[in-house]
Amino acid sequence: MKYLFVHQNFPAQFVHLLRDLHRQGGNEIVFISETGRMQMPGVRRVCYRLPPAARVDAPAPVGELARGMQRAAEVARAARTLRGLGYVPDIIIGHHGWGEMLELGDVYPDVPMLGYYEFFYHPTGLDVGFDPEFAPRPDVAPLVRARNSLNLLALAGPGWGHTPTHFQRATYPEWARGRLTLLPEGVDLEKCAPAPQARMQPFTMGDIHVRPGEKLVTYVARDLEPYRGFHVFMRALPHILGTRADTRVIMVGGDGVSYGGRAPGGATWRQHMLAELGDRLDLSRVHFAGRVDHGSFRRLLQRSDAHVYLTYPFVVSWSLREAMACGCAIVGSRTPPVEEFVHDGRTARLVPFLEPRRIADGVLELLEDRRLARRLRMQVRAQAEQELDMRTYMARYHSLIGQLVACGGRPALSEVA
Image 1 (spheres, rainbow, N blue to C red):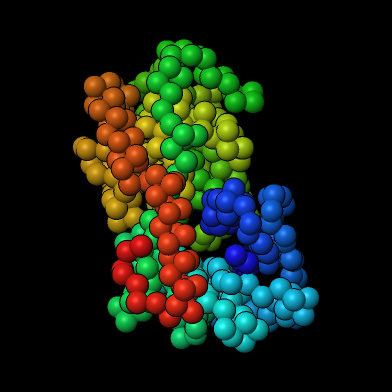
Image 2: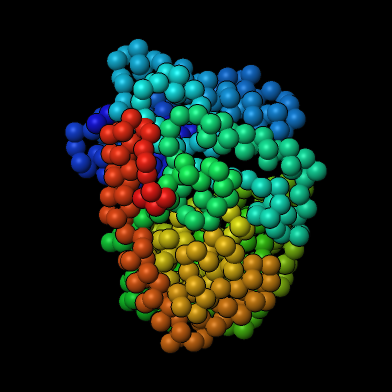
């Protein structure tokens, strides 16, 4: 089959599907994107660029919608070039969050489209206003409407959609959910697997060294920022480190901002929290690893004695699924996206997101109660094997694609793939 993928950042959520299609053999794959340095065998990339006119100074809501429409135009331009060269895909697969697919139905009117619907924003009740420490901007409602306009335009157009969790599907209006198949994402359970012996051996990551017998608390996010609870986790550290002199903390994540706003005064959130905590934090036992390769990330999870995952009511990170697969003893936030994956006392210890002392107590409980930690590790791995297997995910994905191609993009599909 011939595939056309679209996402501003290659390869994004489609990395596992791309690898599987290449392993199958016999497929032609073209990927339209704006950025991305990764190279993948069997995938031809076509890059688009936003012209300066797409970056004009405008009120945030206007700019949000304008950039989406500009992306749609540039992706359509690239697709017309492909069509002029004779490339007509059997299916188009992409992400609807940035408007890139909005004009592809004009270029390829008879080609089925499968769009990834990640999140429908709300001015209240979900991520916006969840953390009382950060008051929403005065223009948040218009900005949310502008951002959702791209979702709504996509839902009004041709094609079918899918989304990975019940929580994410429920953020969309009820009338739209009939167009969205629930397609739970999977994990490579062979690569992401427990390694119990790792916690008894020395661990090294760059210039960070953890000795046998030391307890290791881990935290992972794309960027160290409030949306993923970095600020409240940092405030939990003085109590954790003060109670357990044998404990080290390794945090993985960049200093950028993936979601939400920047720290006051132009500082990074890491700098901001270090300044707030001052000498209450023993920096000889707190390590910031930055962003790491996936192999180092997996080894870190396998060595972890307690892994902390916190998030606003927002899209859950891939790292949570991988922590489950690695059999981590997880301390998670009691927020809906996390509660869909793990359950308090059965597969994790869940704590209130906004309470650093409760986060600290959850970590300390797992460090001190070995029997509980062992049971949670075993049960969360068993759950991952049952619900997050990559082969099942790929089989469902291929089935959904096959149904769309067979019926010309207008299927009578079930709610769950």
